[in-house]
Length: 385
Image 1 (cartoon, rainbow, N blue to C red):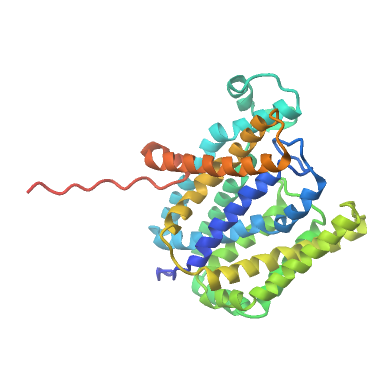
Image 2: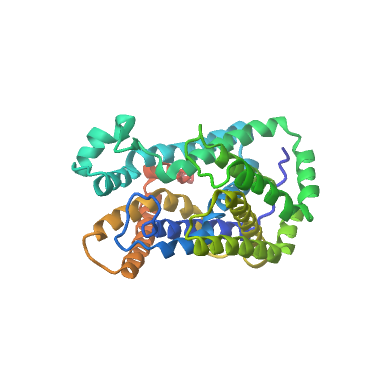
């Protein structure tokens, strides 16, 4: 593909940071909603589902879009496609292995202790039960948990690396520009997502198992490839800006319908409503993503002193955030605080814990690859005069 440098659009960098920040708050919310999670507060409330549904439709798709966008710049700077794949494999699979072995286990232990009657301590669990490569209390061990995203991102990177030598990128990029630099931008992706959510998998759920997760792959792989193509398309970025308000209206209308169903039917929709509910989910999903890209490009497209630090911190934050949430929630269970105080402490503890994890890890050279950071540059020494 062309080695022409991709113009820098800082708005998408800021959007990437914001998307992961939203994810952290969302996972704190998982402690309080009546959905399955590794740690549950005694202050869970059904109404908490409603604000969660405001972001549930689009949060992960947006992460794959911005990840694809970032991959374009990484591929452009890499020493060829094989070098790109090698770099991304190290940057993704090494932290994935580290995370599965050391970061995720406390989540599984807390879930087993609080929900399945497990009586062993954490050290006993980690040394005797976690690496069983089977199930315990219905939980598959060792576990991926939130790190499924990293595995999927690597798989989609492999697909991208296979496509690059096969596709004539100048022609493909031109076709992308012609298709999406107009009315097709809000329509075509929405129709695709309507097919996924309203027709093929009405009210379906992701399995987070790459071998059985067709619904997720039909959503996230196109989102990743869209982000990759978007990084080389100023015309389509401009179209995102022009359609940002229409996208926002789509997002509000889709969420409004979902809200009406949840409030009017108490979440118990009849089967005939599933395709319509799924279509509303799709409209909310793409409309919100389109709006966020457009607003980011229009209003956040500027650099700042903190941007490089924040963009570097995103991956370490993602790697550790859910474990901090689950462990702190477990510690807070017997304290007897109010729900609001619990939530505030969880958010504060997660931010501080992630920050400490990142700031310590980035300064210790052997830890940097484990938390998804580039190795420190080798020091250069001036020749003795």
